[in-house]
Length: 68
Image (cartoon, rainbow, N blue to C red; front, side):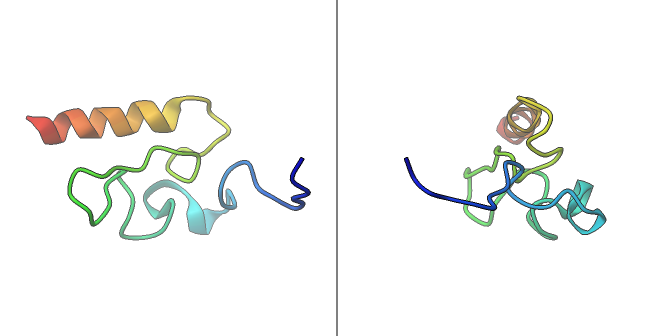
């Protein structure tokens, strides 16, 4: 067991400054990264970790858009 404390299952606070187009940080929303064909799809992305599977589905939809 790893003795980690005060972690956050949402990979960031669900505060106004970290929601919607600001998640995980301004400029890295919409699941894309500065590295071509490298996407984010974890709890740190919109809509957060509280909605199971949604970040992955939304990232997959953006990947499909980019493939067209």
